[in-house]
Image 1 (cartoon, rainbow, N blue to C red):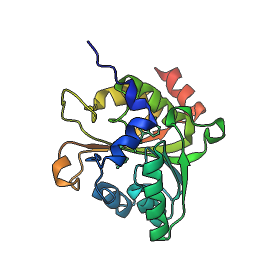
Image 2 (cartoon, rainbow, N blue to C red):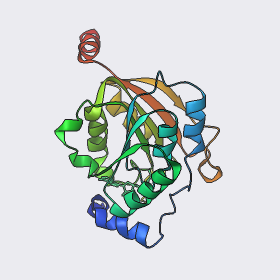
Image 3 (tube, protein in one colour):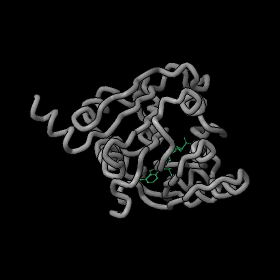
Length: 216
Ligand SMILES: C[S@@+](CC[C@H](N)C(=O)[O-])C[C@H]1O[C@@H](n2cnc3c(N)ncnc32)[C@H](O)[C@@H]1O
């Protein structure tokens, strides 16, 4: 029988985790994988980026320092308060948005050059994964880029974090996105080494999508 994971869709659950100091996912710094990604000049240009489930804001600050125009989204007021302090301390500009990522306003549709995911996809109710990917697609501009560092990919039986099925992500995205890069990063933090997969996808324009559809 499937466990009821609906509590994971509430900000109260996540706020309580932050309040209790039960936030073992928190690296206390940006992931070295994103530090390395920015250094490798793989991304075509700086631009606007939405960070989904930004937590305490480390990766958001990293991208802001890299020149990106960052919108960091989370529905936990405690995580955002902590992120706000950190952002202020670092003296960078990050727009913080307290919102449920599953009900983002229409005004955000097709607004971003990039969307960033790290340790949020594995933390939501697994039943909502396709919905999550639809959100990514909706808020990206045509030819916008989805950077997903998917952890964990180790097939663990329960969560959160729930194990990510990379093939499931690919099956869902490949009809509307092109996969630019997929790799198991060398630079993952030690406990996550070999257990996470970096994927970079480019969203097709509607013309590109219908061209592909016609060829199938
Ligand atoms: C496991 S934490 C990861 C945080 C951050 N990405 C990191 O790597 O430290 C998941 C985060 O997603 C947020 N979150 C979960 N579901 C959400 C939702 N539906 N809308 C907005 N934020 C959500 C939680 O509040 C939490 O901060």
